[in-house]
Image (cartoon, rainbow, N blue to C red; front, side, top):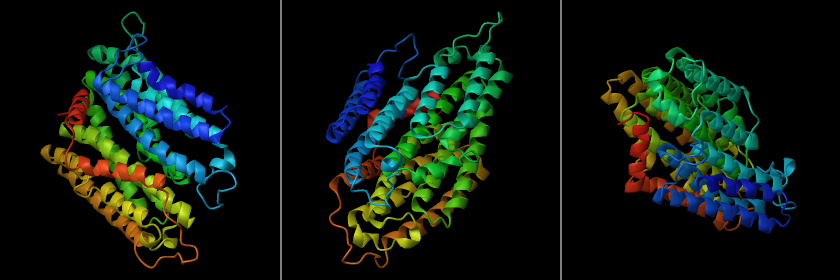
Length: 471
């Protein structure tokens, strides 16, 4: 069953390149999303056995991030059906975020989307540092050009291999479980150097500042479906890769070394995001910088350790769902107004009442306003800093959160309220249901997680945090 999780979307992705009818291709996209969600649900109920001598296995961290990916891809697929119809040749407006039909036909778009799911799944299933790198590189090739970051990560793997060389000069297996088991035997100097390269390499892909420069450009220019998956799922793949490396570091009794680096990069990311969000006039670009903020919170939580690791795992869920919701709604707004400029959008509550209401709800969620789940996870990270007596970290953390709240509030409120820029002649018709249900469901889940965390999810988050040395 482990292999089926990535083979099904992989084979379907290849099939999508040759299917001619658009309807069949869209049905294939939805069918694969449903099948993947079904297999992921089965993994919760009946944990699959490792395959290929441990190369593929699903541990607590893998299951958590696989579940996030599966949920987001399913909701994005429903949204994507309406998006593909709206962007079909002959119906696309020049102003829409549809590079889809400028640079790639629908077959290529759908095929790459399914292969993207396959590679993200493989990242979650990988039990080998080398296979993780291959899967992550392939994931990025399907959506973005590769950068020097992935090469630095490869160098980091080589250095970890050097640290694992035994007395005979032979390198032990690079299976994560094996490295963790032999942690006390690893060479600390080489391992720390390897972790630095892995953190920089995968940190580039995760969007940690100052390695984040690609992220606002890519997320702001991508179609809504891709932006949702980029920010909600793809960043998690890089984060999971860093967590795998951190597990090895912790097993070698060098956790403090990695934690301080994660705390520093986490605070820098939040600070950089705060600077660029204030005064931002491109709402999709603002959401991209918000992702830089939240990956900073994830790094900070893991870096603090203890209950902070639990907060980071919970925040990974909350942020992914909320950011996907916001990017899908941003696609609705862009398709009607035809601009990403905040200055040109007023009175969205009149022109797009449901989308605008969800837009405001998404703002409250992404800024950590109670009772949304993001408030709970951000509060847990703050609690961890205070319990450890790290007052300076707590003050900076709260300060950056406050600045970002003010900066985003100005944009969201101006877009939603005020006199509409739409006249009765060009007022849009009823909003498409398929463009509303997916983000609405995501928003409801995030709201629910702020009130009650289901026992199975709570148990998984607890085990994932413990795997990182937390709690």
